[in-house]
Length: 239
Image 1: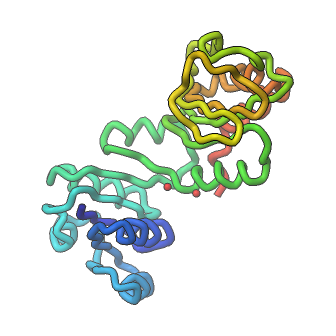
Image 2 (image 1 turned 45 degrees about the horizontal axis):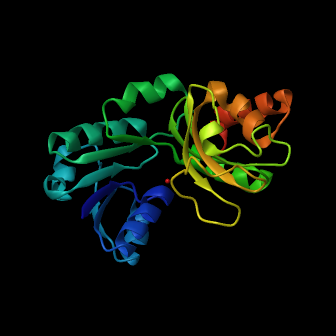
């Protein structure tokens, strides 16, 4: 596949390297001379200029690209580039660096194919590493939806239940299940939940504390506090 990435900074260049390593063709757009030199030193094709200008996008052959990643730190540049690329039929991915507020997400999410927030992804990864333990945030799906992996404990109210007997809140659903030390897979309704087993759950932030209480056995106070910190941890400094 062919990709155009705007921004050869930390996020853009790393993304380009991953794509190239997987055999894809990548063209970068950048206007900072030092970043251009660094990208070209790594043997990337770089178009010099403002990625929000149509002629620069055309010079990068956006007309034949499968997707465009607008990954600069400038929200206006990213949004404008995505609107132009959308005109050419590209899949559009836009980076935002603002505080993770619902109104910002909603403003742009309907206009592009996907909005990414590298800082929040990084914060999730850092938090998981620091906390360790039985709960691991995986990804934000929307401003109020998060995918989490939870490890069943001896103190969990559902310990000993089968998957079919598990009753999560209405705004939560099981996506995957893995027995202790075994890979995750599609949930089997007849399997029992035991100490060390893992469940991957998609849940609304409003019910995360209840999910924690059921699957991990956290106290109501601790579960509410931890779920609240998940919902607001986007101010930390990751796809």
